[in-house]
Length: 441
Ligand code: UGA
Image (tube, rainbow, N blue to C red; front, side, top):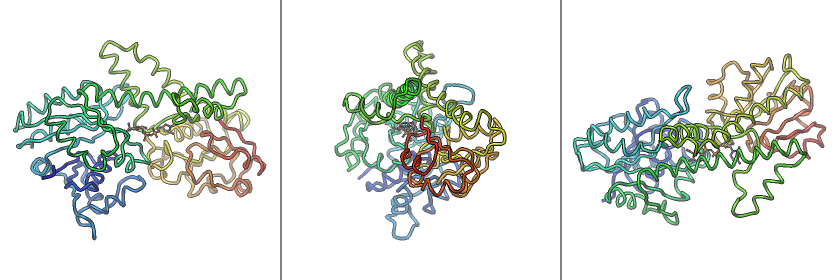
């Protein structure tokens, strides 16, 4: 019989993983400690914006007309313990307030609660991004707390999905990495991933620390690529070069590759910034902090981009934001997401607001989250309304909708035709033709 699956934590990662497992034919039970989230999911509503996820959920959530009924949700740990053979732990590990290290309390609480209800053989699979060494510690915790004792095994199976592509990345991963301490873990995970999900994807089996490190190393490399190109952008700006062309040209070398070389206001979100910081903190604990000092530079280049955007905007409006109207297009940390965690766009908007600018923000999907995080900013229902009366327009998240904007139509509502492209994504020629002073990063 196919193993029955539970998913602990139904955020981006968990909700997507649960729906994807149901899509592959498994019986799945999702648990979250927030009852409102569980109620929403059970009704077939995804609590965040993620393309394709709601359709997948509705195809399988029990109680939705015409669904397969393979996917159910609960807040009961006992139910999870009774139901599951394989338990995926998908809770988040945010950055600790005022520290570089990440907060492991949600993972620890989830594993402890789960352990106590494991009365029969089970595999617990960690998917959360954790500091290296966590899996070994959690395996010990499981052994101590689980009534089934040695019949409970732990595996570590990091997740590499991108927001905005979560469904696609989960169903067609680049690679499947599993960290195991015993044969049973590997066998069961091979069975789970023997479905179309694993077809064509390399299956890498490693020990716990390697599996944990693959995830942090991958995100650190991606962050480094972005900061590298942003450092080149600083040089290009000083020397009069074009960083977009430069990225394209170096990207022709397959060893470098074209991806993740988009210069702009830098990376944000709930993963890259906190992962590089947590990695540095962990290296410090391991006594090898020097190995990662370059990540400090990666982080500071990244943060400098936000400040640089603010400076460019200030310069553009004549040296001070006081009494100036600033339109901000984009609030989310990237397009096709409603996530505003550590968003460069909102950070820039906030800095300008603090410096006395009258900022009006518009974002296609992130307005509610942005309002909650930054209630003091003004928000407009459309890009056109955000731009009304503006002395400068800042393009800070590269939504497709912004590339489609008609510069001639916008020109009729702004006070000054000045636009700064913080993502190097707009068609400079078209804007200039409509009479705009156009500057990019
Ligand atoms: C990232 C990784 O890409 C995923 O592989 C990983 O699974 C995930 O973190 C995670 O740890 O959970 P995500 O945070 O969804 O995924 O977003 P990315 O697509 O990586 O973008 C991160 C930030 O980098 C965004 O703010 C984006 O605008 C910025 N970025 C990306 C650039 O500034 N330039 C680029 O060339 C690419």
